[in-house]
Amino acid sequence: MVENMNIKQKITRNLINIPGWHTNKKIVVIESDDWGSVRMPSREVYQQFLDKGVRVDKDPYCRYDCLATAEDLEALFEVLTSVKDKNGRHAVLTADTVVANPLFDKIKESGFKEYFYEPFTETLKRDKQHEGAFELWKQGMAAGIFHPQLHGREHLNVKKWLRTLQSGEEVTRLSFDLGTFGLTSLVDARIKNNYMGAFNSGLNEDIVEYDTIITEGQQLFEQIFGYKSESFIATTYTWNPKIEPILLSNGVKYIQGIPSQHIPLDDDTTFIYKKDNYLGKKSNAGLLYLVRNCHFEPSQGISSAADCLKRVSIAFRWCKPAIISMHRLNVIGGIVESNRKCNLKALKWLLAQIVQKYPDVEFITSDQLGNLINTCK
Image 1 (cartoon, rainbow, N blue to C red):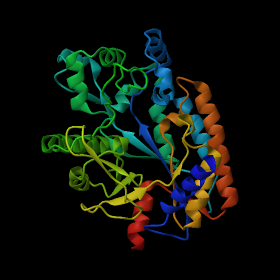
Image 2: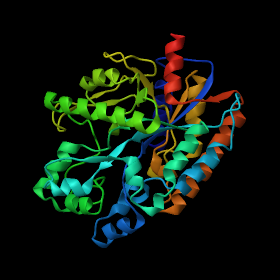
Image 3: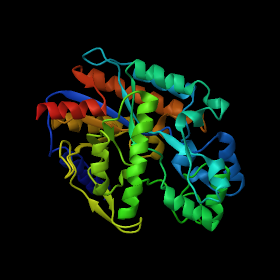
Image 4: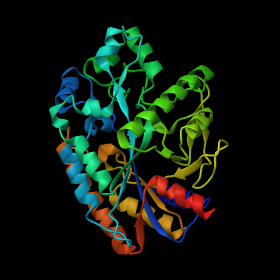
């Protein structure tokens, strides 16, 4: 049985690299989602959940993920600068960023009937453990090793969250009181809704609201970083194609993702799966797909450094860029310090192996890859 699974896995990993854009260049792109978003506010809040019987230790995002501290970023940057490609460039992280978080106090004052948000840069200022963190963002950007792109205004289904808060559902209200929203049924069976999918509706009335959310998100992104994001990745890989013209009108050219797309048909209850996205394919709206074919997700138990290196080798064998998925939680140590230390050690090994095995490798960002594909067509 295990042998059959291995064969099937090998076939699948090769098949996803066959269609689409090809290149003889050895290109590596590292895409990392969820930067800027509140998940677990602090180690103290994590312990409060456990004390109240909410098993946040059962979900890796709740157990490990929180806003990056200056220490997290310094450790990450040390790893990224430990290697250079054929052009003398260090490894670079495409940091897919949500630019805002809920403003909890004002939402509560409204009786949970209105939504308010603040830039994530303001969220960082609320806790001393994040002192100096955004200065590290700017240093990483200036050094060319940390490149933000747009992941959304917030990592949150606003309408569903407010509706549940108004109903008084116990664990969601507790999470709100402790400054978060990112809990799922993995940690407590009383949680019936997942609020992490920001665009989990296909209803026209919600598409109108998504127009506002995307437009405000891109505007805030430009205010914070000084440029518009040319690429975008939808939270939870879920979006209806109706939002694509909105993305296009806001300057987005490229959609990051995986081969399959979760398409909501109504208000987050009925979905279809589109499984034929591939690198270089254009959507009906004219957006170019950038498709991940490698994974380094040790905190989720999905893919180790050694496994990721095998995926990189398969990508290069098929003359495809290696687009590596590595969510933020893998490099965060604010809740569990060993999570950051162990995973960064593995990432450093992975990058060293890549440059040793492929001395002609090139590290670029997601939007640079999109521009290269457009130029070569």
